[in-house]
Image (tube, rainbow, N blue to C red; front, side):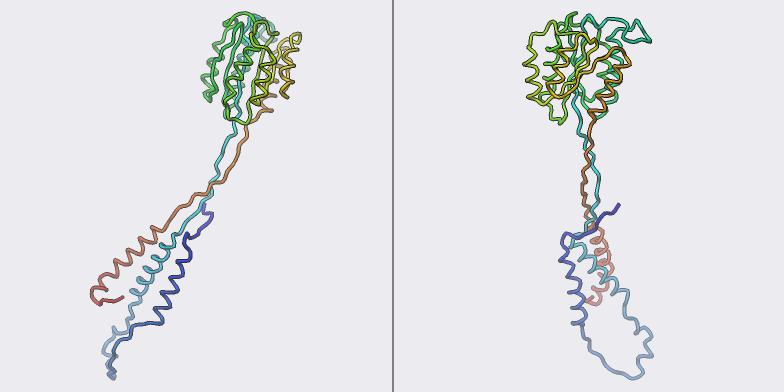
Length: 304
């Protein structure tokens, strides 16, 4: 799509009226002899070489246009995604093996339900980087921030109950999550912390974790599977302006992740880029072709 056409050096176009006025005012005068009735004997004398004149002025016009550097400017819409960096912190303590969280599949453990819902959440965050932290008696980073959703879904699928011990180092898991996000340049940094129990094994105090989250402008959503253990999770969420969600079954958990997904949408920014295409070459080529046509005449007559 042609958005605009302009010249880089438009003042050079003034050469055209200069050449034209010069041609009109300073025509070459030739010697002539008057011979009565001789005109009728020369039928070709009426040929004023209009073709040569057209070629000559086409050459001059194209040369002047080429010197003026004509440009076609096209506007291109550039999309920039303001991605969200998300860390999913998952509890793998012994209590996550409890049955009954999925009413349709009673023998499916809490962790298995969480893994299924989390994998769907990861797949939905196409434009965002996602990191994974798991915690039991200790905490580890299972995946750094990455756009590789398939790899992260596979990591989530391989998590087992008790793999890091049966206790709950919830605050340690939170600090590990903050470590993943502290160097992020994203405008939106969030942690989704899921657990079914109070902290029982952390070595880091909660106050320190909350200060770190505030320092790096990280928002922490908490998901509590058992209401009786919601106090610490409420404190964590409320201290940074986020929200604590209490869930009793798989249906509740799916709603919570969908809710968070809608609250933390990636933003798309549109910038208009102008791309200039210089087309002087085409006019220069036409001028050279015209000059080539005039060369034989210059050799014979010495003038244009």
